[in-house]
Length: 186
Ligand SMILES: [Zn+2]
Image 1 (spheres, rainbow, N blue to C red):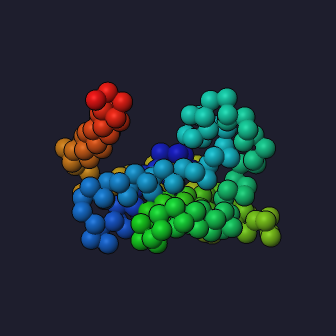
Image 2 (tube, rainbow, N blue to C red):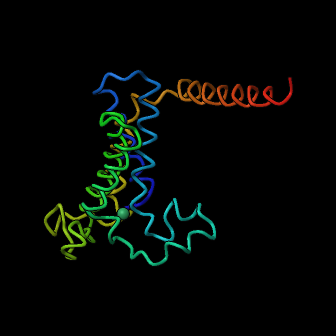
Image 3 (cartoon, rainbow, N blue to C red):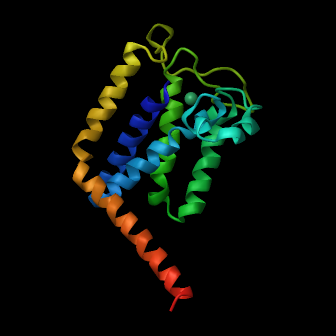
């Protein structure tokens, strides 16, 4: 599936999780964003993927990864979940990142190419759907799924509020910078 579809599905999963936890609206946005980013991590094995495109010359370091290989496996999802858990120290906070990654694997599993879910133990492709129902990447059904994910997100998207979160984060950074400068200039 395409990067933006993965991001939309991940963001929707992150938003739904945040709401189910009763988190306030700022955290819904942060949770959705974290899940959206995690949702494109598996395609780090794709030279044309969102992340690799932004890595510049460093992208070459990942050329050895076959597309839809080990990063699209249950084993890697478990590693990712562990990293998220250790990074945040709390399973509820780690969950948007875990859901984002998992949503990518589930979405790709619905396509015609399937994924090698049980690598490194079993290299065969695993599919979530019977042959005739499998989706074609960038096909009409993928657009439809992306549309539904976007609709799911709609109730949580409030441009004013998102810019509020960004302003708060931006304001904090300016303050930290000011504090740091004052350390040196009395
Ligand atoms: Zn993928």
